[in-house]
Picture 1 (cartoon, rainbow, N blue to C red):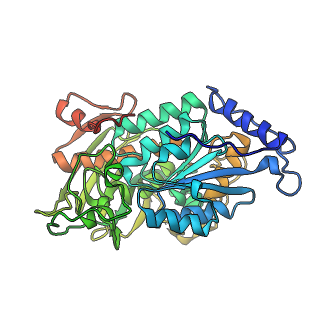
Picture 2: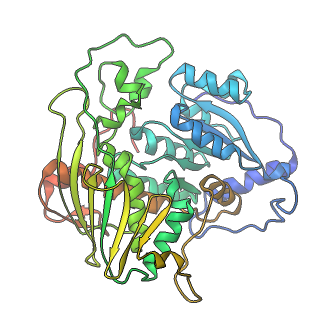
Picture 3: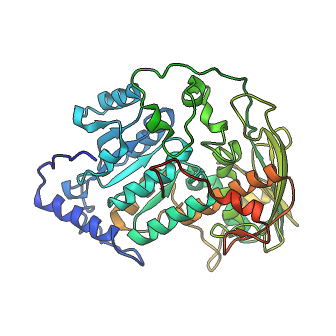
Length: 435
C-alpha cells in the first residue's frame, strides 16, 4: 500500500477520529455518545464531520454518493475505481485533488483521515473491500447483495463484530415508510395468522458469446477480476449494456439476479416474518438457464423457502408474480415494494397501539448510516440482517442449480447430510486474495 500524507487536523477533529478508531477496535455493545459531545446541538461542528471514501465509482455509486452527501456534515475525501473515466469523473465532480483518486482501494482504506467508506463495486468484491476497510478502522456502507457466497458473508459479519464497526447494507427499501408500515402490520397480526409470502422479482438475462477483446487503456482488468478466476476480457463482462454483464455471470454473482435484485424482496419478507436474523429450514427450486453464451446464471425460476414457523416464501420471476412482496394471512393480505396495498382496505387504516411490536424506523437510509456512525448505534440493516437476506437469496440459487429439496440449518449455516450442497457455500479465491 502506498503511504498517504496526513492532513493537518484541529484538536477536536483529531479527538473524534481517535474515538472512532477506539470504537472500531472494541468488541461488544456499541457505545452511545451524547449529541452535545458530538456537536449536534446546533450547526454541524468541524469535529462532527464524517469523512468518506468511495470505492467502485460506476453507475450505482451515483445514487449512493448523492444520498450520503445530502446528509449534513458528510465530506468526500477520496475515490477509488479500476476504470480511470469513473475516477476522473467523480474526482472532478467532488473537486478532489489528484492524490485523492486511486486505482487500488487499499490506498484509500489506508488513509487515517477517512471515517467511513461506501462500496458499490461488483458483487464479488463487496466482502473483500468491506473487510479491508473495517480492519483499517472504517465504518462501511455496502451495496447489495452483501456477498458472493454464504461463507464470505459470515466472515464479514464476524469482522464487523470483532472491530465494532458500523455497517449499513444497501437494501434501501428497508427505510421506506410503506415497507415499514407493511411489516409492522403483519408482525402485529393485522392479516391474521401469516400463511405464505409471495415474491415476484425480475428475471435474469441471456446473451450470446462475446470474443476476447483488447483491454482498454485506463482499465486495471486484473484488479477488476481480483479474487475471481482469470478470464479473457470482453466488454460486456465489465461494462454496462443497460446493466453490467457481471450481474449475470456466476464468477461474480453466484445466484445472479436472484441475489442481485431479489435480495431486496427477501429482506422485506424476512423482516415481516420476524426472522430477519435467521433463515429457512428447507429450500427447493428450479429454473431455466442460458443454453450458452457469456451469461450463465438463472433466468426464470420458482423457489420455495420454508421456515420454522411453517410459513413458506414462494419466490418467482415477475412473469409469474407481481413485482414485490405479498404477505398472505388468514384474514387478508398486504403488498409492498416501497408503497403499500392491502385487502381488505380497512387494514390500511389500522393503528399500532401501546404494547404492540414497533419496528426500527429510519426514513432515510443514508442519514441512518451517518447518524449511527456518529452515535455508534446499530443501523436499520446491519451486517447480520444483510447476511441473512443475502444468504437466503444464495440458497435459492443453490436450490435452482441442484434442483432438489435441500434441508438447511440456519444456526450452523450448513445443509443437513448434503456434502455436494455444502461445497457450494464457498468458493476458492484467486491468489493473493482471501477473506
